Image (tube, rainbow, N blue to C red; front, top):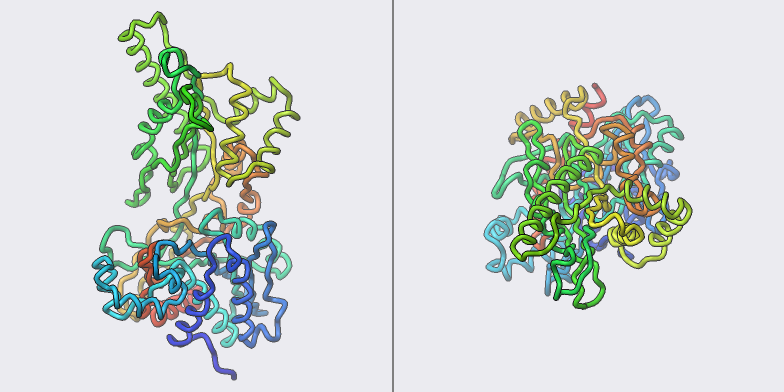
Length: 537
């Protein structure tokens, strides 16, 4: 029997260093090339020498690709899908060490010469010589290394379990890779007669609070959605401000109602989602003039647990109406103060984008609005958020008689929350790996309902009604041409999810690092135990 090449701590470190050395920053040329390197390593596994067609690079619509590799046992009745992403964020934060950001061993050694410049916790980790620094070491190429290693072991030892490796680009931006991979998962299941029984991700553990030293695994992932608002006021000269309505001010009042609003937080089994926060706020004037800004836009980051797009839009509408009432009250008081001869301030209307679009279609015709919307999406320079804003702005300008108004809509991306902690398979696996880690590995492993970083597991199933997901599409300016989520296909993926990964710190920082003893000695044993337990379930 041939010796395995990706199992020892040294072998895993070498594999990780090689994969990290390819600086696969999102939307870079290296990201396009990266799957070929993974394919190169997989071809060292004897199983894939005799089954080369089981490794596939799947070309995406934008020219990038995701990779699948299938180990299939003729007696297996279960298939575990191992999900990872291979893109990383940029390295500008490394400063004069950015040439070493993708050379972990060299970077770690170089940091000893400037250890006094590091935060205290990073310096302590460096001096322990147990941590490997570098972009992508923990987020999340170590997880991919674990999955490649598991494929080799399973095929060499002929586990009675099908393993499907799926590694995708773009997780750090819009998750185009995973969203395009979902329909392919269904195709592969049909082609190879696969029964997906578990989705396994290996994103790193994140601390729940500063100096948190606990060990975690996750039975779901937190969701993220981006509700947005375009405030449409009334234009006037700055010399006559009371004759108009400043949209930038309207946006600031709305933001005051949303920022850190505990009503938009959720608590599930003692775990609370972070509060919402403003991501982007600006008026839509293109140049300096002495006209007040009468159109202004804001985008908000909102993290989800049980709620979905339909729930959020209802809550946003209530909050926007409360903000509108405050604006009207404020204006009424100021009219009295400045003795403006207006008995009542203008009434501020709150509209959903779908309501604005329906009105615009009745006014100007479905075809005209459809062509306008799609031309903005396909011809406007800018990212998808900018394009969505321009669609709303153009429709608002065509329907000015509805103003003043607050138009609520969604901007990309949307990561639905998923949690399968109550699934019998996950409950049994959780108990098993907690016991195993305590008895065999010498540490306590703690389950957490939601991974507290954005994760591609969001698309590995659908929790909620398809009709509720439709509410996202109808309030997304530009629609599915701009940004699409395969909700229908996601609803057909019914296996539970779990995330068991390495210990890492400081994702997206220049001090990103991986704990090597856990990653190369304990984690492989833990993942092996998890999969072997699943075979027997």
